[in-house]
View (cartoon, rainbow, N blue to C red):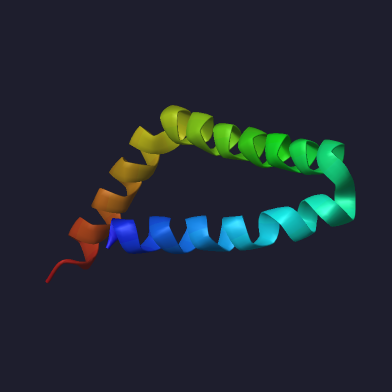
Amino acid sequence: MNSVYRGTLAFVAAEIAIPLQDSIGDGGLYTFWAGLMLIMEVLVLLTLKFGKKWRERSEKIEKRNDP
């Protein structure tokens, strides 16, 4: 299933890359991708910092709701 998502996203990215580059230019496209990568990195860092707490809270809720 993972390869289906990766392949689909790769196809979509390849299809929109050239029109997007033509409309906003090289600098705009690279700035857009850099911003996207920055957002993704922040999400990874948040998961590293708070992931254990989120997992423990989720497990506690699952135990409470388990019949």
